[in-house]
Amino acid sequence: GSAIRLPFPMPTEERRRELAKECSQIAEEARVAVRNVRRDVNGKIERDEELSEDDQKREKNGIQKLTDTYIAQTRPVFLRRTRRYQSL
Image 1 (cartoon, rainbow, N blue to C red):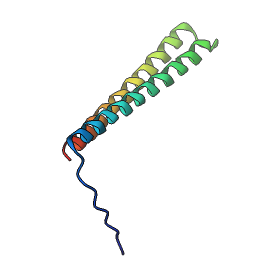
Image 2: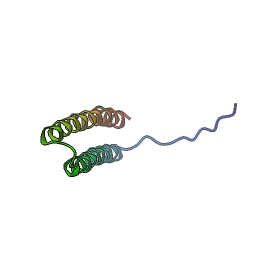
Image 3: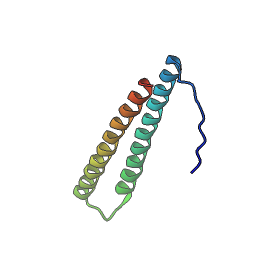
């Protein structure tokens, strides 16, 4: 096959810092999005009149565990991307 090569200059130290900062912002946006979903689901649980108070508490605890899991998954991705940009 044929390939097209495009030479890109190495990013400067300032640009690498900007890229790392952008990664940080994207990671924070992801965490906020997960928390917003948690808030929405917790609101639906509270409005569900068929669930007892204990069931609501149990469901909220399950949602919190999922939230913690997904927020924890953003950290390694953020660190990996940041290291990648810093090592360029």
